[in-house]
Length: 92
Length: 250
Image (cartoon, rainbow over all chains, first blue to last red):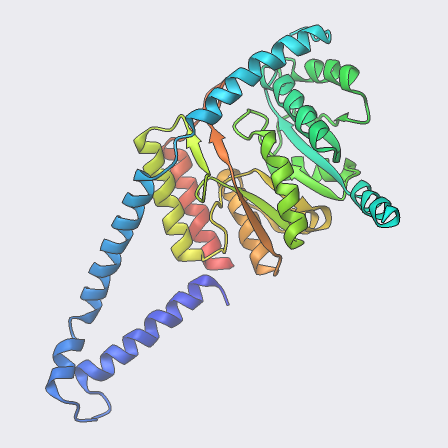
């Protein structure tokens, strides 16, 4: 099953569950409070997911390591390499 | 005691690591990357070869490579040039064909991938018997150097979207510093059709799909020292297209 199908399946399952409760499709005579909680749920979930995404990406950008040390080490090694290669007879 | 020691040595000697270096106009960087590879492989004592696949660089990369071959020996530096610039995927196929190692390491020749991590890749692979080990900029001590905020934001954002949509089981999908079992790489390359950034992503997504195990090692990515690094609108659009293609087909 492709990721697209997995997503469609997941979304339709949630959609069905939401429809059942919100519109009482099976005539289960659920208490009114169920309906009140259920109907704004998709929007609520979207907002929560949006916030989670922004927070996660923001946090990860802020904590993205800057490898100053690695860059310095590399620069030093480049010098060393050039000197050594010249000694070994490499003509650039 | 002596017996088990020599047995261990034999087993280690049986493993050989072929480093594939596809190059195009890397005359400045090639000697440096080769020097670093020789240094770290020499220190760690693993058996290796470096396969330089130059795609007809007009700047004389191949001539430099020939000089390096004289310095370090034909068993260590193997030249497999091609006439003109062809895709990365075919460069790997070309390289694998000539590789004598049972493990293949792929990396960029522009010094953004440091050979010091290779012994860590090998150790990780041996620890878990992984089919592939991927370097990751996004975990642990991993990181980048030379990226501004915009670049970091795009990178993290793209990575997040990809993680959500594909759940690939690896944290760095577009990185191209990896170690593969040779037969695993062969099978993957055959199946992968994408280009550019998406190619690396497809490799790891297909690896997961085929049930291969993936190990990760944090790496520091130092953006191109010489030459220019590119990330424009075109790259982003083709990345998104590739992502959606993988989303619908894997």
